Image: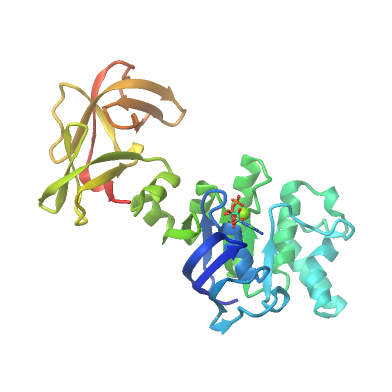
Length: 354
Ligand SMILES: Nc1ncnc2c1ncn2[C@@H]1O[C@H](COP(=O)(O)OP(=O)(O)OP(=O)(O)O)[C@@H](O)[C@H]1O
Ligand SMILES: [Mg+2]
């Protein structure tokens, strides 16, 4: 396995810019996820790393070796697609052993390796079946085994769980994470599902419109988004637009819908947004004093929705969109129409300028 570096790599298809020049360093053994909406350039990035398409600019390196001019079959990659792409006329054993047979590995050794891989994907007894005789989830486990059989330098997966239903997808996320922990192959994984990205990845690159907007661990991206796009795409967030007024004690004062709110200062000025996750806010009744050092914004409860493990409330507070607050189901009942204040600590919000 290898580290992967993209240096100034871009891709333009007949006048359409799919990927603007990006730099990406993926350390050996890392599980990196490319996360972003449809059309943002995830598949393009993966196909460039695989060698199925050529970059318009830039170089691609595996473990320091420049592979930009190598065809896919010389790059020693493993690939898993959304639609499994198993060979229908071959048994599961032959599917998994395919890359090994192509490389001229002796039959006994292939048989041994196939057995090991079937153990790894916890399907020890399906070797002589055909793909149509397996469920979708089982076929996708076989596709992963086939992709890693020849111990590739890099494993590339493009929305591999996209065709599976939610429960199965969650089970498969665990399977793939477990396989990665065992084999430690450098992995680039593509998804547009933020929950999937957060649960599986060492790091996430959030993509938008052909660029990487932010790169970091799931926790960094969720707690410290650096752009409005990232804040809004990963999880749910209230974006409160306002005007910066100057600092005091390391906090920037921002006026939002008639309230003065404080947020950790980043030196920004002018028009800014404050991002606050719904679960970081709590509600107090209108007459109750605001806890010391907290931000508060007054409003009227617009709706209240019970969602099992939490209660979701919407507050009309004169902001562009109603403020979303998530409360524990044991919190006292607040009915629509009630006057309340949403309160939170300044450090539980982020300042966003673009
Ligand atoms: N062969 C092609 N010719 C022209 N334009 C292309 C080609 N392949 C992709 N594009 C364009 O490049 C952009 C990025 O496409 P890409 O397939 O990388 O997106 P994606 O992030 O994988 O999206 P999705 O989540 O829908 O799979 C899109 O605007 C797409 O229309
Ligand atoms: Mg795609």
